[in-house]
Length: 136
Length: 267
View 1 (cartoon, rainbow over the protein chains, first blue to last red):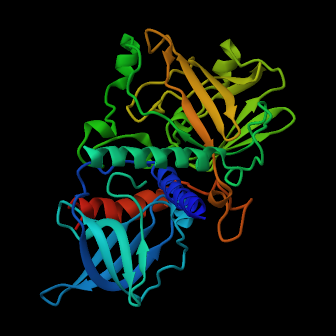
View 2: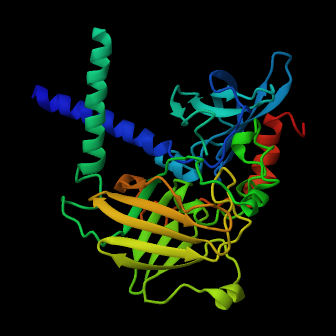
View 3: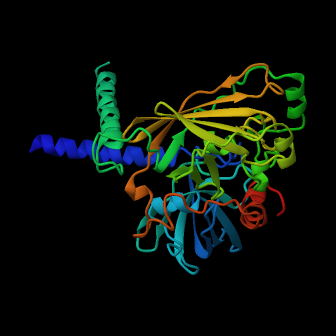
C-alpha cells in the first residue's frame, strides 16, 4: 500500500513536471529587458476586457491609484492553446469582475505586466504560466 | 552534504518517474504497447530543438545577406529587432519545423506525408510519389516560396526529405542566419520509440555557407491525449490549433496596447 502511494506521488510529480516541460518549450519571441521577471507585484481592479486571441492572451482592468485616479492596466499571458491546456477558456474573465492581479512589472513603470496569477473575489486563484522569459 | 545527496536522489527519482511516465506509460501516448510501426509517423508531436547559433563560416554572399538583420539576441528591447516574424511574416522553412517548437501533426496519405503546424496553422507537403525536386529552369520559373518544394522517400526506416526553392527573405533561424533559394535542405526522421521521433537536418547551401551545416538532432515527443483535446473536443480544435499571428492581433492590438506601453512608447 505504501509503495502504491509512493508510486502515485511520483506519477503526480512527473505529470506536473511534464506539463511544465511541454509548456515551456515554445517561445514566440523574447521580451528582452522589458519586464522585471524577478519582481512580483499586485494590483486590484475591475476587468474591462479579456482578449482571448493568439498569439497573446491579454487581460485589461481599471484600477484606482492612491490619488483616486483610474488607471488602465494591461497584462499579457501566453497563447490560446497553451492557456486552454492550462484550463483557461474565453469566458474565464468577464468585464466587471473584481480581481487582484499578480504580475511581473514593466521596467518602464508603465501600467503593463506579465500576468502571473489572478485572484477572484471568492478567493479562487487562477494561475497563468511562465515568467517574463518563457511566455510566447 | 547529506542534504545535497538527498536532493540528488529525489532529483533522480523525479527524472526517472518523468521519463517513465512521460515517454513509456501507455496511457500517455496514442500507442497502447511498446510495439510500433517505424514507418508510421502519424500523430501529434512536439519538437524540442536545441537553440544553437553555430553555423559553419559564412561565405561573402552569406555575410552580405546578414547585413541589416537585427535578431532578438542582439537587442535589449523587443521593438529593436527586425525579425520578420514580429510583423507576422511566415517563419518559412526550416525555421518553422526546426525552431518554433510548437505542435506538429504528421499525416500519411497515399502519395504524401503532410506536416500540419499549429504555428501559422499551415502545412508542408512531402511528396512521396517518386517525383523529382524542381531544378534548373523549372525551379527558376516556380520561384521562391516560404516553405519550398519537398520530396521524401524511405531509406530503411528513416524518412528522408529534400527541400529547395526557399524565399531568401526568411531567416533560417532566430539568429538571422541566411537561406538560399538554391539551398538543398535534408531532413531525416527516424522513429526511435513508441512516442519519440529523432529528427536531423543538414543545410547544404554553398552560396551562403562554406560547408554543409549539420544541426543538432531534435527529439519530437508524442503529445498526450489531454494535450490535443480541449473542452471535450478533438479533431477540428485539436493539438494543432489556430496559432496564427494575425497583424490585426499582433500589430494593431498587442503592440499598440501592451508592447509599446511597456516600453514607455505611445502613452
